Amino acid sequence: MELRDYLRLLRKYWVQITAVAAGVVLAAIVVTISTPKQYTAEAQLFVATNSSSVDVGSALTGAQFSSQRVKTYTLLVETPQVLKPVTAELGYEVDPDAVSAQSPLDTVLVVISATDGDPQRAANIANAIANRLAVLIQDLETPLSAGAESPVKASVVQQAIAPDGPTSPRPLLNLALGILLGVAAGVGIALLRESLDITVKSLDDVSEITKVAPVGVVSFDPNMGTSLTGTLSSRSPRSESFRGIRTNLQYVDVDNPPKVIVVTSSIQGEGKTTTSMNLAVALAQAGKRVLLVEADLRKPRVAENLGLENAVGLTNVLAGELKVKDAILAWRRGLVHVLPSGPLPPNPSELLGSENMHKLIEELRKIYDYVIIDAAPLLPVTDTAALSVHTDGVLLVVKFGMTTREQLARTVETMNMVGAKLLGPIMNFVPSDSSGYGYGYGYGYGYGYGYGYGEKEMEEALSKDSESQK
Image 1 (spheres, helix red, strand yellow):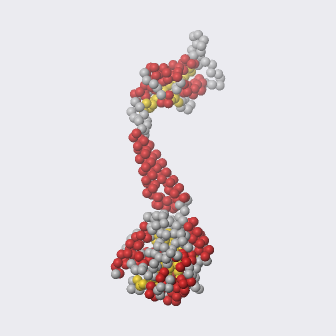
Image 2 (cartoon, one colour):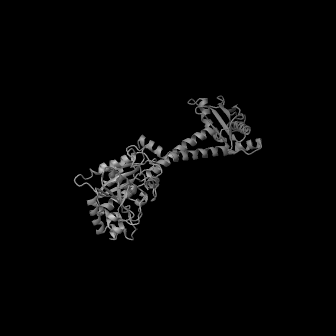
Image 3 (spheres, helix red, strand yellow):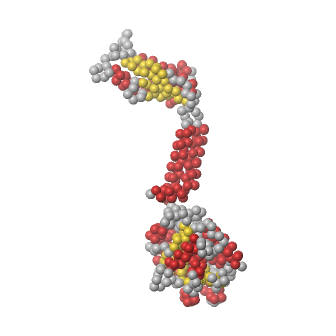
């Protein structure tokens, strides 16, 4: 990963990282407060040789001899020969784990440490052990022959004193370690989540999976106002996004420009309905005669969002109960014509794939410059697959941070199986702070099959807009 990837990761998961770090720091504080204070006192022994009493040889000096022996003396501190007499002298049990001894490198010193919850007791234990060890060394090194002298002499050169402050816990160190470990754990969890994230977040991913260049990128705008998803406003960033899609459609197939276009998605909640309405408005604003057809016969939303009646519509026309001209409604004084879904049928797939649907599309093609069809998601049902073969192509809406790579691949495979033409994918809900439309992450996107935050907000804006027209 590059530096910008880590920065993107921090920007996306900063809340989680902060929460984990705060949790670890809080745990460190609790442990520090609840841990009993411990005090450590130290005493020192100096070990020397009596050169007159031992032949140290030509290769070793007395100091070298002492240095070698000192390493052994440090191991005697925790033995019963030392601890039992000390316990008897002090009148309380000495924990072997609370005492230790070491010899600094290249010295003949033995440093004895004792730890206890009381500073004075720690000093008493260290001094008692030092004194007892000096005696034990003298006894062990004295030859058994009568009148023999010990070749080694151990002397206490530094008495232990009660320490002023505890050696543990160490609040500042614990706090620093808590912050360090907390941030590391937070970043580690973020990296794990990122590695497990299989959603689409870049145009490169979209192009690689679909083998078709995206025809547009629609940004997420939390301040969309009350107009039709911002598209009716000429200065809205979203309106610019859909004007870009409108322009790109002219170059998808120069020889045979698409007129009848299906707008769909892999699953529900990716913004296909709002994309259909926005695109219809953008095309109408360019002076085109546009019909928006509500062909999602499972969960129709167009008429509801636009504040139009849905008593009759597409299903009535396909059933031969009504002529198409009598089912079409005008929205915004005819800016866009709308063909609602009508009553929901029990067999949407058969109805949309019927010959009557094919004839209706051909009839509408002669009347309108563009026919935008809002269809059901491709993966849950086969309705759109049956419908798409009668049209000029499909615009596939891909929701940033929600659509998975597998879902997108399965959708493309489904379209290829029925021979539907993919005009191009549309990357939807791309955060405005994304760099290159692939680096950066959105906010408020769910991972379910329900409508996301952005689309719900857009629908509320649509409702307000329709009320203002009445």
